[in-house]
Image (cartoon, rainbow, N blue to C red; front, side):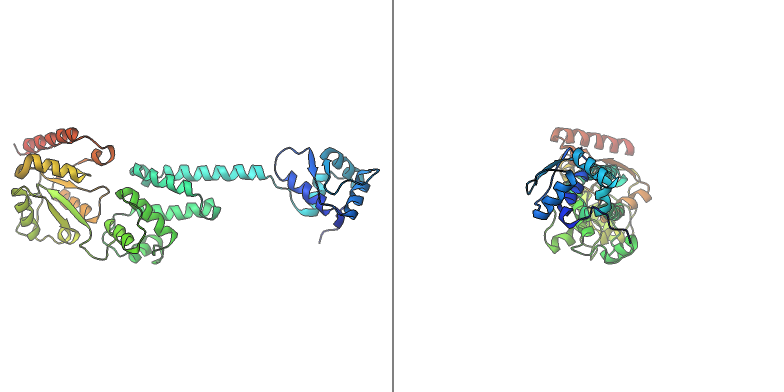
Length: 351
């Protein structure tokens, strides 16, 4: 137990509190306003400063004069005295600067994370999070939550796992991505940015967004759009694909289709991949039943897209990706020019 400081008098407590508060700002202090002081406090302050009359109830006191009086009274400067009476003097300005540096470092780390740099559209997500500030004002808690969200995003699109299974595998907690949790909301907002949709405000919309990212209750929610696919094999998916290609129609395959297509061997030549469905429509309108193989990711690829592209690549296809149209809003003329390149390359491959 510490000794009671001789200047720690009840009537002077308002004075010491005011001095402690001003010194804790971290800024230069020349004068301190104290009060309100009662009669006893005014008398005690007059005695301390050696005044010949009582000060007002809320006096403004030069800090240098107060420091000299305190030093003469107890041999210690006023900073040491108020620290002994009320506790350590902090530097709030330095603390604010330190926290600002921590926040800046956090957002810089997030913007430079591999998941974000691989999908620059996620900078919109980063900007939204930065605008909304830290979780509970804590950079450490925010970084921990963001680290978990980035781990989930890096693993998407998923392979059709249920959400609790995905959460348990990635985060060690099957409830970590439950609807309504902060982490779930963070990931869903990122997915909404990636897919170019609004953040869903109802449970059904949130389930649909998870499904689009390959976290589905069934194998029918995730689909992939393609044209010109002419796989070999007697399986149903190969047959339907050839019929659609021969008649100049697109085909929409579900995750169930591409997981269990039956006998199916993809084309060995180039398969072109684009983000925007309008490119498929343009190619189909121009080339019809002669359209070369073209797969659409419809933005960020879902599980069905990933499964189909993996199968095609395993069968020897050369995947040629072009993703400018969704992000740079190319003109129809530019899209048409790329389609001409597409058909030229296809014809050259096949002689």
